[in-house]
Image (tube, helix red, strand yellow):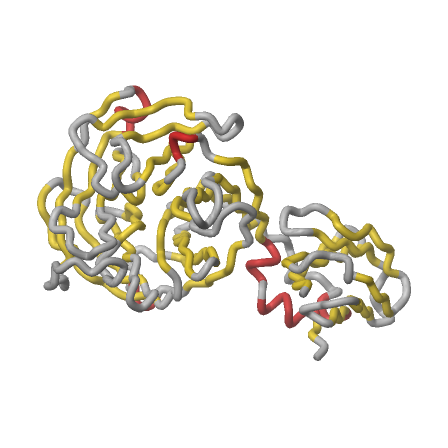
Length: 366
């Protein structure tokens, strides 16, 4: 069946704009990188359960640890995520794979202390879930595990990792010191195991990451001042990563780019990625409805057809890292057939350049 390019663009708009770059493998100190945060032009991360009570400042160029910051008064039971506001860094010690923890907590440390000292003290925020009544051990069979958190206004927002139904339940609790009951505010049907979160106050954008069945996913939504979480509108997309699908950390490094970290193990190497969602001016592109690309998925040949009114263009086929594997090809005739039989199975992108305008769509080679 033929698919017009305009239909493909509408179906995969986010995928067209995404660029994922593998920055490099993480150092040995961060083989189980879980939380990730960007503060003062630096990335900070930590390992999860059983690791040292240490936050690592990472050099993004050398991929070496620049500084190790030891939290001397708090063990790492199961650290899973980092969040920050203007004053504090928050460490979520709330990993709960068995669903039986009764010592869930969030560590709070002044950001000035993190930036200026190699040994710090944490303040403790304790909490429990308002709707958890069963504390029997149920390995990987609970909806009270949590690996994702953001700081929003005067609250901390938790996103659970639901092993039972692949949703995420949303809870809130105060940022203040004390012992709190986390209030359930909603549920999102994300169809994945949520493993990280970050929030950009400049754009009010929330990003969640997760993984399931060998596939990493990224979920984005816009958060309002008094968000009703059940009504959050979000978009989910699959991520094509070169080294690992078990993404654990996510952090905004500017308004259009994220850093992602993955945990090493059976799913691949522990690595750091850069994801950018730069949105070109597609909406005014006059060539949208003048192009047909088929078949997709392709096996042997890819056909590109232009209406007679369309101007000539340049065609490139790129792999998932942006490298050109076919092209550049000049498209002058109305119909062009491209031999793709020698390309390995996987995800590619077809780029068409018209008078310095770019149209890009995802292509599957089988």
